[in-house]
Image 1 (tube, rainbow, N blue to C red):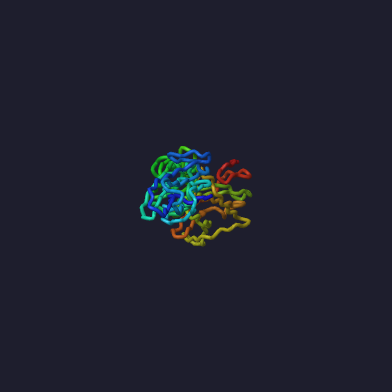
Image 2 (cartoon, rainbow, N blue to C red; image 1 turned 90 degrees about the vertical axis):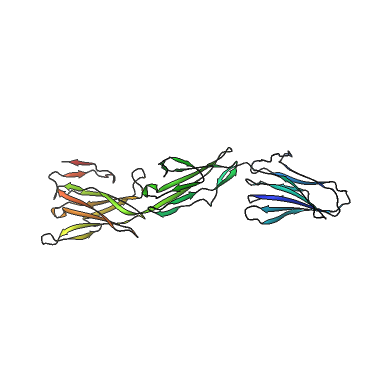
Length: 345
């Protein structure tokens, strides 16, 4: 019993006779029930029998029968069996092709008998397909999806979030997906779907990450009453890949007109810095950074700066001005970091 585990092969049956007899080759393939295939198209996993028969030799003739395999993908040859007219395949693999029977006598006269075998199977996406990949903003990239199966699978690309592809369409057919001059909008999860008449095969997913310089969206200003034991929130969306390093600073006066300096802000009894990853429906490749100023006082008023740094790119900053309000703004407890619900008193 022979189990084939490689694709694109053909089988050779070689019979060497010791007399110059007229031979008529016969070559057939049968399924598990003994039915001859023509054309040969069993399902993957079914048992198959190959028979190499010589006609025209007498019982006294000597011969040598050999089954060999030549693999199409690398040209290597293997001997499968000798001195047997029957070769059995247990669980043939998808798309085993071009099975030949060749009979050779002592005069080196060769006769070929050829049959083709295609094993019907659902599509399988191969590991040679493109895996997670990172590219720079403005680059072009080709995503490849390799699939096997019979009949030949149809391949379709789409993004997991159902956003349009670079072509502007939601779906695109073909084993290769070309993306030109990519931007951060092209980042995300891509899916490759392979299908044929037998059914839908496995799904292949990969993540495309586009490296781009940081940029920041902030509230312009935030107001709060001072010296009433109340807090204030400041929020900024920071974009960039790889994820940038974020820091906050407070602008302070140096005691002289028009002379100011910045002081780094850290988590303390006065400040609380938080960062979360918003849902993909809000933004991708972004961080929501919040600075909470606890018990706002007159000295807390002024400009606050957020800095974003990422390797290989220039730093980016945003600014929020905290000004004094007459009315107290009381933020709801357990306030979602993505919202700005408040009461005004």
